[in-house]
Every structure is written in structure tokens, then in C-alpha cells.
Length: 168
Image 1: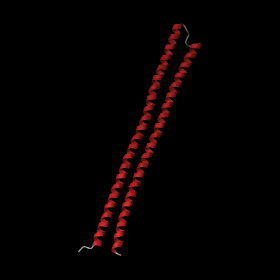
Image 2: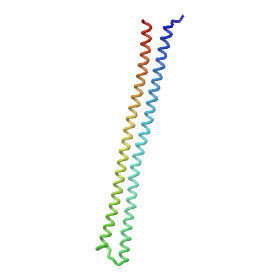
Image 3: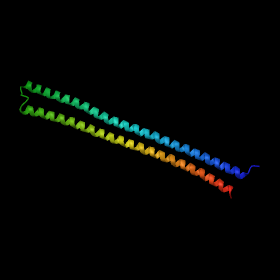
Image 4: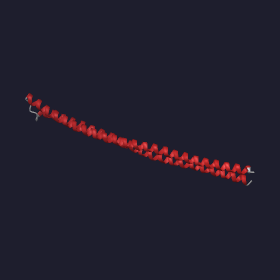
């Protein structure tokens, strides 16, 4: 006849093993979820960098267009002055042309500055995403290790309980 204590001991050890295996799988699943979230953060970081570069490119293209517009304004202003019989290189005509050029330069510089600030903000945002990815990975590894440790502790507890029953 089979000893009931041995049956109890066997089932306790089997239960402990199943618990340890389940804990290990749960820990691995948590680590995989953390890795997935970290990859999303890395993708968001790359997207932020691309947005920053795009803003700079658009601003540079706009500044070229603004420069062309300023040149066309200066040329057409000169033509209007000439048509009106005003000498465009002297007096009020020269002051008007200089003021137009100054305003155009300021607008171009302001647009480029704003684009650089936006690009810098996007780089900072990207850095935040990259840092979050690292934290997420570390948290996932810590959760995996903690759950595995709990499984091993449970298994050892089961073995200890069995040994205690056998030798009491």
C-alpha cells in the first residue's frame, strides 16, 4: 500500500515545481511586455528626431523663399521709384529699401531661430523617450527576476514542508 505521507509529499513537490515554472513564465512575459514598451519608446524617440530635422528643413526652405520674396520686393520697389522719377539709391527711397531689407532679414532670422528651438525641443523629447526605454527595460528585468525568485522561494518552501512532514 502506498504511504499517504509520500503521496502528499509528491503532490506538494509537484505543485511547487508547477508554481516555479509558472512564475518563470510569468516573469518572462513581463520582461517581453517591457521590451515591447521600450521599443515603442525608441520608435517615438526616432519620430521626435525626424520631426525636429523636418522643422529645420522646412524653415531653411522657407528662408530661401523669404529671401527671394525680399529680393523681388526690393526690385519692384526700385522699379516703382524709377517709374515715379525718384532716385532709388538716395534719401527716403534708400531708407525705405534698407528698412524693407532689415525687416526681411529679421523675419528670416526669427523663423530659423524658432525652427532651431523646435528642433532642440524635439531632441529633448527624443532623449526622454530613450531614457524611458532604458527604465522600462530595467523594470521588466527586475520584475522577471522578482517573479522567478518568488517561484524558487515557493518551491523551496514546498520542499521544506515535505521534508518537515517526512521527518516528524
